[in-house]
Image (cartoon, rainbow over all chains, first blue to last red; front, side, top):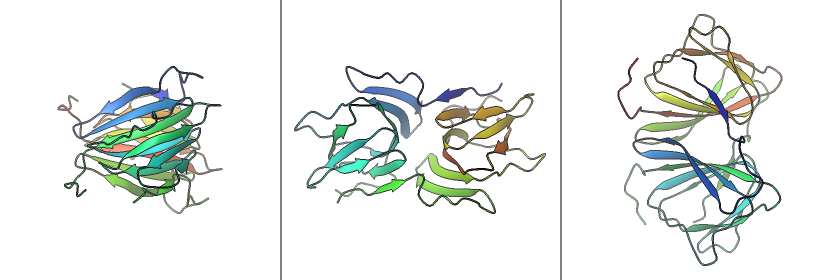
Length: 116
Length: 116
């Protein structure tokens, strides 16, 4: 049986009431998901503070990630990727309100104990 | 310390003597890699026959995957992804000789025993 093809940009809505998270694969120690943002940001004062490492890639659009303690956010465009270690507090400071931003995120259990 | 940004299309050479494989992350049960092809194909008569599942995404360029027993190859372009189960024999039938094809491949251990 031939595997079927899907596309990362299929079914990407132009606007969304909330960020859209779609699980693509779940493995024993990882989870791969597509995220679509249309101008969404992490609410002010809130931070992601995750148990798992996260490798995230921008496929389309534009975003800014803010890391706790840093003065300036990190701008991201198509093809840009970043490894966010577990417990590294961050928030989505900005996503392009003019076009959907499509992310690919790989969440995974760190191989070695986290030294915070 | 702020995580650093890298780009999937940075350092992509226009031509290569052989396909380029670059490991991005290695986890306990998975491996994420970037592959760059510049017209490369799997040698005639050879097949990939892998122990692990492979989820593969074309980020840029164009390719055709041939699956054993199928009459026609599967064409892939930017954003297209496919899950190739372990033991599913396949080969790269064609990649665009005119521009680099950049793939993202996630190899991982199947969660349940493979029933061939």
